[in-house]
Image (cartoon, rainbow, N blue to C red; front, side):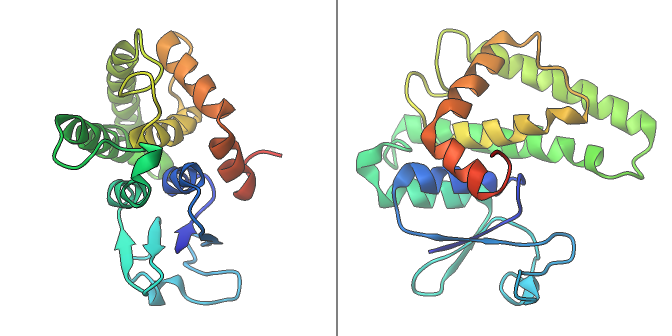
Length: 201
């Protein structure tokens, strides 16, 4: 498999899950917004949408969207229990978390990465994110990870999105979330993926 990623972007989530899985893969960096690979290839020839993550399977099939990619990876190694079995309520709860993180956190944060976003919209966006993360913090009370005691794929996504809080979100009062982030940062798979992306030494 090949994972196309941009350092520190949402593609770090499947990168972490691939490390957790133990599966063989190749990680290929994409320079955004130029849409170029290191060898000069136009990335849009591989993924016409031009964004990451994008997973290419060994047979050449492409899979896009991080929430789908992490579930696919989890299902290749069921013994690792990276996601509950398909058809179970727990699996739908995992999908609920993945959708929440994608729509209520990830996409909500998008205006903060655009320098031309008006200040009023930036302020409203930060307030909305703070409120959502306060709710997430409450859900983490009494549990190590989103689904309970054990890591599962939405944890990687939440960790990545909350790495972006340098854009003006205060996590200090959210003690359950900050403890979660510390647990995630200590995981060998997280450290391996972040080192591969040049995010830590």
